[in-house]
Length: 186
Image (cartoon, rainbow, N blue to C red; front, top):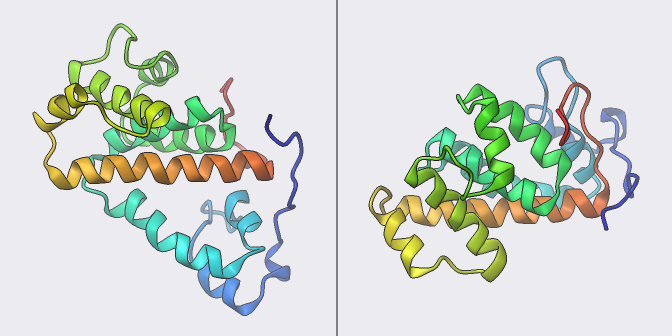
């Protein structure tokens, strides 16, 4: 069961210490000066955020996965974890990366949804296998290897791990959707 209300309220910028201000002053914004609830909530533990952001930035901005593949993976993790905050944020990002509304609906159905290319189905299957068994099967690994190199396979595994971790935090802390971000119904 997910937290039905925030267990930690997001800190407002006037509550940040210098360490948080240095980390989040230039990140986590939505273009109008607001800070995303995930960052404002995690600001309760500045040293954790500082170290987590390094890894999170690799996965989100420096990964060898294409933006589209990365977002399909993150959306599948979010859907499987029932992490509405993560889902909503990444629906917005996925649309910017060219993922269609139809594909977003297919993510909910998983790798068996009619319409996926064989590789997209393999990508979602890898997510499900990692979530269910903590291992990518030999058949899925072989199919991934037809398109992905070793670095991409590693980035895939670590993307699933990163966003599973984030989903656990978001769900446990009850982080609320940011204004204008769709939930599962949007």
